[in-house]
Amino acid sequence: MPRRVAAAQISHETNRFSAVATDLAAFRASGLRQGAAVLDDAAGTNTAFGGFLAGAAAHDLDLVPLVSVWATPSGVVARDAFDALAGMLTGGLRAALAAGPLDGLLLALHGAMVTEDHDDGEAELLRRARAVVGPATPIVATLDLHANISPTMVGLADVLIGYDTYPHVDMARRAEEACAIVARLIRREVRPTPVLVTPPMLPTSQNMTTDRDPMRALIAHAHRLETDPRVINATVAGGFPPSDVVDAGLSVLVTTDGDPGLARRLANRLAQDAWHRRDGFLGGVATFDEAATLLRDLPLGATPVAGPTVLVDIGDNPWTGSPGDSAELVRFLLAERVRGAAVALVADPAVAAAAHAAGAGAHLDLSLGGKTDRRHGDPLPVRAAVGALSDGAYVNEGPMMAGVRVALGPSAVLVCRPPDNPGAPGVEVLVTSRAETPIALNAFRAHGIEPTERRVIGLKGKGHFRAAFGPIAARIVLVEGPGISGADLTRLPLAQVRRPIWPLDTGARFDPSDAFDR
Ligand SMILES: [Zn+2]
Image (cartoon, rainbow, N blue to C red; front, side, top):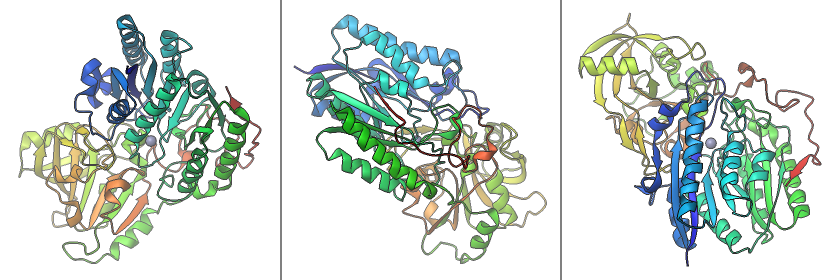
């Protein structure tokens, strides 16, 4: 007899300093599905529900889909939106229970959601779900690698499972792992004893990708722990500083089978490993002057021999909560008169609409980007030739979130030049109506630009771009324009983060006895 297990995804990474509202419309824009529709197109995708489907088949679970929703990282989640989404979760659970007993609940959460009423959004979701299913029904949840894991979350779930990858290419695999664990919990084969250790570390994520140390070594350490049959899961979460909550920062969560002492020893050792490697999270960002020198040294051929130079502005990364409307990268490329450059993207719905109204081939004098707030640079005056026009819809070819539909709204490729210098080299800019971090090559290809044939590819991002753009890049250069998503935490008026904390405070010290177990 298959075991009946409900499943839901409610995911948001909240940047408290974002001026972009996170209302129900924002969630609907990224995709909101309820009931059976959650499973439409999910099979085979590298997503939570792609993994829940595969895991349910492997472990004989009868999946009851409730709701699936996420939104592009943005500001604090509005009260109405949170209550509506939480209501879809609890309402779905009640309806499922009315139809028959539930053996478990699977959740795909982020771990850095902040709402108007709740600094720990995931804890509140878990609290409301737990209130419906009761204390005996196992709840297993996946968390993003950038989760700020809190003791409250640990106390409310049976097992929490963090992603092991950044770029996050294991969303489906971790969801499958959740299915395997919930099946063991239903059979009462294991009794989870989690211990959470939070060294006072607040790393930013530009060096946090799991293809390099220190995170590569820390994830390898966690995987070594998981080879012990007494260990159910070992998670290292890098944390998300701009959510500005008391629990923001790196955390280690080790869940053993009925052995809290072992969990404490292993979690402390792994947290000490992270603490000792902490300086490896620093740096990795070039100045614009250094980037200019590198670009001047590039050969001038029409097609790059070894692939494009990929230039990434981490200051305006939509998937860290920036608006994606900074024009600073374009400003820099125009000032440096860089040839063969293409940028994805600048979110500017007014400019995209103007381009659509004028039509392909038209020339427009425009003020590009910099309109959402005063933290991401000024609008950039350009003379633009309108190129390809599109509805901004394409399917991610992966590897991250392969198979997922992207909807950027009416979009246009604009070949931009300085208004006072029509003979200068043009920079191709993908202007969209909505902001997302471009993580697939077809962000360009869907708009008629072949990225391997450009000398310079400009991106907004932090780490996720590496999954697709790393293999085609001759060189990757990170720069930090103005914005709320970069490596410079002194730009953010952090008020809730616990202090002292590294790297902000020289007095931060790690005491491994400071562990939480349930
Ligand atoms: Zn993440």
